[in-house]
Image 1 (spheres, rainbow, N blue to C red):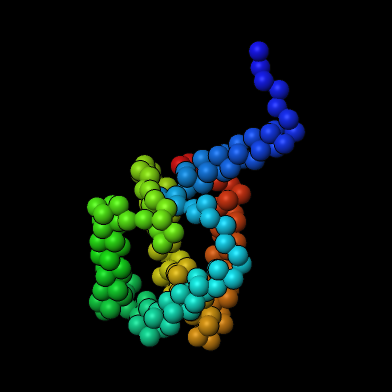
Image 2 (image 1 turned 45 degrees about the vertical axis):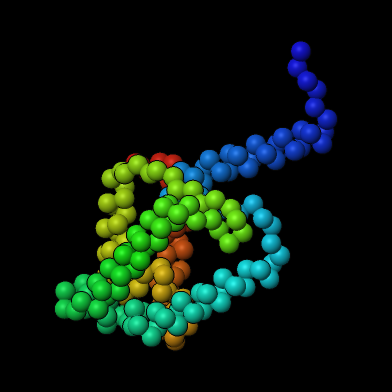
Length: 178
């Protein structure tokens, strides 16, 4: 016959079911699902803010956040941005190859697992929309905060639009062709 669970066991079972379901849903939207199971204190996350600030400084110094550089790229007038993007792709490819080849673990000793993704036409449509938005505004999501930090306050409108667009996509996601 079936086993009767206590309230404590039932709560634990419900929490685990939620975690499993949450993992399933999030794994549909990502290429690499590596969420640490280690619980850190709030101040542990300040290291990410420090890295973000350094990243913003690098973006600013390399002129990646420059509206003029971005317009030069889309008008095919300069190689600068293509060189930066190409270098980032090469470094990313090499990093993933090394992680897979040497089975690199996180700094906390956890495995890094890559999940296969299926291609769909929505990626083409999304890429085109992203490119059009980037060309019109001169900003992509990465450097938005660096642009605002550098004093280009009009980019707050672009950031607000990006957040609104993400919300709209999330709202209509189930009804869109994927």
